[in-house]
Image (cartoon, rainbow, N blue to C red; front, side, top):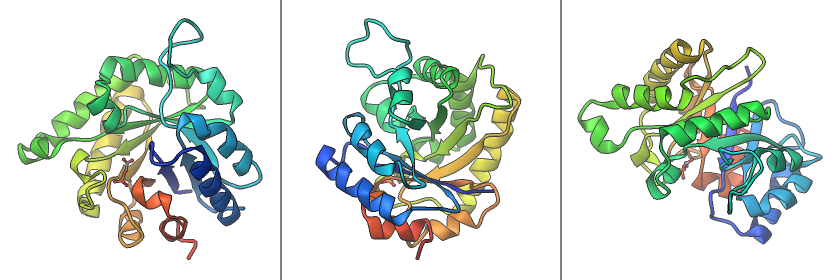
Length: 244
Ligand code: PGA
């Protein structure tokens, strides 16, 4: 099965920089045996979408409104994302949970909104260092999955992806060991299947780089990678996807 590589550019690049990086992506990934996905900020989606058209790279938004069209100042809705050629949306990234106080209920609405509009939600979950130390990893992952996936009707033709990102591993240079990620992924698949009756694909995120990527990808339940910092460097990202 294809591995999934999602490049999360966060708010690291402005429109000009995203435009230029996406041209590099399009050059490198004219075709690809894996699913390669770029997630620029909202303001860059339009330019990046045009640049990626003739490549194998798919487009991801970093967030989605929980609501349909209406009086929701500052929000970006599913219809606009679809019109821009977006295929995936990140939901509940730990930076959104942490800095913008997103909680389970809102995340659940966003996933539902994505599914209704045939966008593939990438639900991000993960425990903090303190929670891991206290041996609460499974408890936290189960809680986050239950809150996010409750009452969703997911037909067989709809997909959902879960990104497992231990919070302290994000942007810190301290990835967890591939064995630990594998065992968390097995747990996540089991719990998700209980809740939605479908086993999602689960990708790992948190300080992935060109040196450690292949160690993660060897494991059977690690279906891909969510890459932040290392996706901003064309050469490094191409090594992660194993072009070189
Ligand atoms: P990182 O970010 O690769 O820079 O750790 C991953 C993410 O937050 O998605």
